[in-house]
Length: 192
Image 1 (cartoon, rainbow, N blue to C red):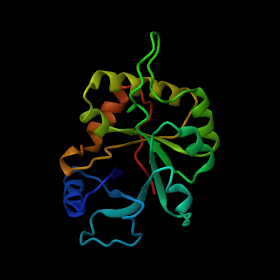
Image 2 (cartoon, helix red, strand yellow; image 1 turned 135 degrees about the vertical axis):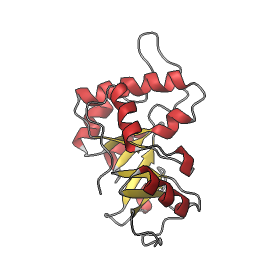
Image 3 (cartoon, rainbow, N blue to C red; image 1 turned 180 degrees about the vertical axis):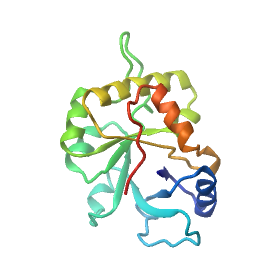
Image 4 (cartoon, helix red, strand yellow; image 1 turned 90 degrees about the horizontal axis):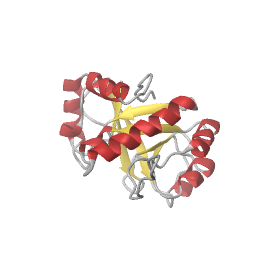
């Protein structure tokens, strides 16, 4: 099982925490400017992968097709899904829009789900978003609604911590239990 994290010069600490929590691998996401494909680490127990945390401006600069590309949800998700090389889009629930009366403004809808399915993009659910949210109930409600949409349209989903600090990581068992309770039928981790 591979967790996705966003390090800030604390990769060794993430590797130690991943060993303690029982992960078989880690995927480090770096900004486009900081991305180096062949970063080496001293630990051999954990398989380390590198990826790019790209914004819309960086998408056209990525030339290597083997690079794992993650994009945080924004106002132009449809363009990212249709035109880009993104492998995963995450944190749809992290928006400032006000919820509607009968549904939540969760950032995901049936049109985006169909486009995601057609373009082989994965939807990522972030534990870090829940941990650091000001209004956890709103984020969890939006996440549950997005999970229902993903289940209905059979969209490929991934769960990960997207942690920025090692202590924001959780064990695989805890993450699977949480996302199953939110309605995700088969919580899966990243496979590279």
